[in-house]
Length: 380
Image (cartoon, rainbow, N blue to C red; front, side, top):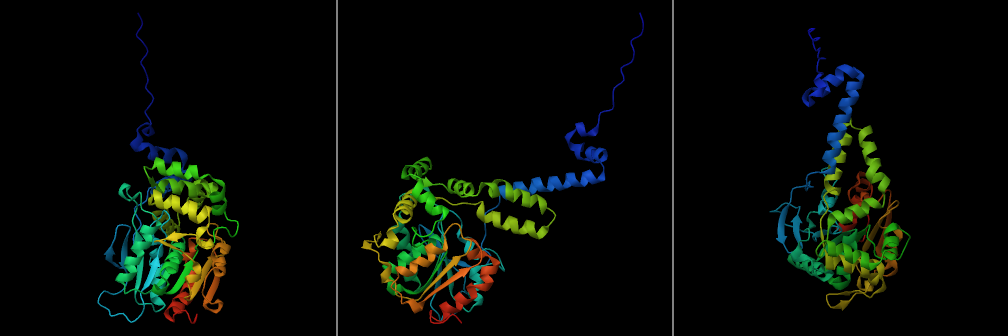
């Protein structure tokens, strides 16, 4: 019986063991391929980071001066400083994202810009994410709590409404005209039938039953993640492919990475809305355009924008595909403010850039700050 031939085992390559796989791959693929491999690993890690970011933070030092069911009122002024000016209240958007958009980051903050323009007492509504206990809160609830905040500030404010905060601010100024000294509406859909933007098309195309079903699925709350998915679907190529291609191309650019992480902390951290508030907004503001038509009932009174007679500043974005410039500027048709006391400015850029874009903050908001400081009598 012959002796069996010895079994010759091939050496086991290190990359069969996961821990050593990158090292072995580098040897086999060469230095150039190894650099590409490292590039890919950085991209994967960064993509995961922007998909699951940490919560957004306020850039400027502030303190909470009032805590209500719907919001925290944040004061960005120096605590012990006596104020000689009317308080400036920024009504941040309550439309599914954090109020930190008004104080995005140092060097790119609306709060910081307004303070630099000479406004000494700046506050922001920090809207809370809706819980199940808040599911029946409606627009009246939010107007009432804005009114509490204004009364706590002395009963008179310079009011700045951003996006959704704009139509809410217009409602407030129409309901309590004696409590608003000047009114700024930035990217605010006042006449929702104007223009031909995608939001208008969605509001008039999708049945109310669909919105009601989304609220039902959320247990009476409109979930922020559901709204975020809807926003992304308006531009799917960019949201699901384009931004990752851009990230891959700029993975070695530390400044680009930092800017991207900052934005995604805000964008990918949606907040929930009360179902009653959300459905009322869809039906009465966007489908029926009741505010512009003078048919909206707020705190027991039919609102007329003709009640607004204070100086008004209208700011719109030239490339805004959320709130078209017509929806902002057509407010002029309905206001009681004298034409010479209405200022209209068309800024370069899109919707979000109106509130945190470096260019708009540098070119438009300093003039708005000075206009507010002068009581709306001058832009200089």
